[in-house]
Structure formats: structure tokens, C-alpha cells
Image (cartoon, rainbow, N blue to C red; front, side, top):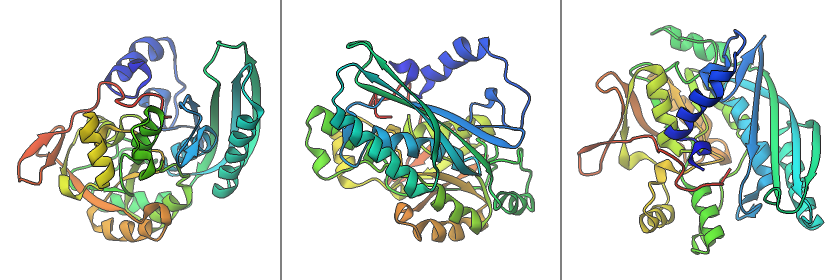
Amino acid sequence: MNHGAGGELMQEFVSRHVLSHLQGRASEVPLEALDDSAVIDGIVFTTDGHTVKPLIFPGGDIGSLSVAGTVNDLAVMGAEPIALSSAVIMEEGLDMETVDHVMASLADASRVCGVPVVTGDTKVMEAGGIDRMVIVTSGIGRRSPHLDSNLERARRSREVKRDWLTDDNIAPGDAIIVSGRLGDHGVALLSFREGYGFETEVQSDIAPLNRMIASAMQAGGIVTIKDPTRGGLANCLNEWSSKSRVGIELDGPSIPVSETVSNACDLLGIDPLSIGNEGKAVIACVPEAAEDVLAALRSHPEGEGAALIGYATDKYDRVVIRTEMGGRRVLDPPVGDPVPRIC
């Protein structure tokens, strides 16, 4: 299970057993970059499989998840999402009420974000051949009209490696911002699935973020964005640190986590910074743009809880958190996903 969980074991598995067999085409953001999307001939393209259990949970379902996850993977690259495909694989015997609920939710999410589903596929497998339903969504996007102004603002003070918002674009001094509270999705889903009771206070944060991200990009100065899904903030920032060859120093008390999520994670022995999210963005921008980006995020419901949580630095070669007591601890990437099958 950990080979598909988004942590270090999955990275090792993909490199050794997937990329070693594939030859990506030379492009602006190629396969081997392992970014949220690829860019080829100016087209941004991504694909994502969704195996969430249960199919319906507090705050969302596999239908809304499949749209938000793919739209967000396009938007964080600096693209305007324009179309989706949806392949639905169902188990024989799945009740039609569930099918209709999921497909109506998928359609609603598509309408809300303005990104239509334009093609797809449907398959049915024998009873026991699959766990109820899997949805695979792919999406394409075009370059955001605001992308060039963001990168140009950054180039006034330092080098920018790529012309897209990729994981390797961060430099010492860049501000690190999150768009809201972390851990809600994973805790809500795990609690509902296992019957812990926290789901009465915490709901999944599933949301397409393309419009919020477009507003943030109008503020300018953004060099990279990522949605902290599998592996959460810890995995996201360690990927940035490794690919950009910089350290990242976080201010622990500034990282937004609700008291309920914090208490649930303490009880379950889970780090909330390693739990997947489905409606949050992590943004790196030049420091002089941080307040403008925060204001833009906070103007949207999805970004009301946006916070500046730290800076990239050349003092370290890893991700470090300053604790409330004034000490420092290393934030390692998760080996696997502490909450499996949440996306």
C-alpha cells in the first residue's frame, strides 16, 4: 500500500519500476520532473486515479474529489484548466443510488469550477474484482495570462529555472504560504471510516482552487504552487527542498491546524502535517509579494485562513520547523501515507 501513498517509498518505486521503463519526450516540464502536471507543446496535461474509501464521506465524495484533484493539479502549474475526461470503473452490484449521487456531485463540481467533462469511459468489473468504484480523471489546460508577470517579478531579483510554476523554482528568501487549515480532509475521512467521531466537527476541504489561484497570480511574484495531497505539507515541502536544492524554515505556531484536527492526530499518533488535503494550496513567492498574495487568497472562501508560515533559506538543506518553545526540529517526508485511501 505504501508504494502508492505519495511518500518516500512511492518515489523510490516510481523511479525504479516505472520511470526506468518509460522514456519521456523532451518538453517544457517532462515526465521525469515528477511535477503535478506535464507541459508539452504549450499544453498542460495531467491524470489522476481516485480510490477513496468510503465513496461518500463528510464534505465530499469520490465524484467531487476527482474533479477537484485534477483541476488543482493543472492550476498549480500556472495553467487555466479547460477540459476534463472521466473514466469510471464500477463493481458489479454497485447500487444505482450511489452511482447517481457520485455522478451528480462530479457534475456539480465541474460546473462550479467552470471546467467541463468532455469525454470519458465506463467499465464494469465482476463482483469482487474492484472495491465498488474507481474514477480516473485527466485534464488539459493552457498557460495562464498572469504567469509571465509573476515570473518576471521574480526575475528582477534572482534566477527563475523554468517558465512554469514547478517544484524546482524556489530560491532562498522566498515566502511560503498556505491557503488554510491543514489536515481536515484526512481526519474527516479517517474518522468517518473508522467511527472515531471527529467527523461531526471536521469535514473534508475538497474544493477546486483554479479561481482562487488565478486571483493570487494576479497579485504577482509567485514562483511555484503545489496542492499538498498525499503526504500533506511535509511531503510537499520536502519535494520543493530536494528539487530546488534549498532549505525551508517554518514557524510552527503560524501553521494553521484546527484544534479538533490537532487533538485527533495526537490521539491517533499522526502528524497533521503529513495528512493529505484536497482543497489547499501551498505557495512560494518572492518576499515582497507575500502580503499581496495573502490578501488575494483571503478574498476567496477557500483561502480565508491563508497564512505565511516560513521562508526558503540557505542555512539548511532540509525542512526545519521552529517550535513554540524556540527549538527546531526536522520535518521529514513521510515514508508512506498515515491515512491510506483518502484520495
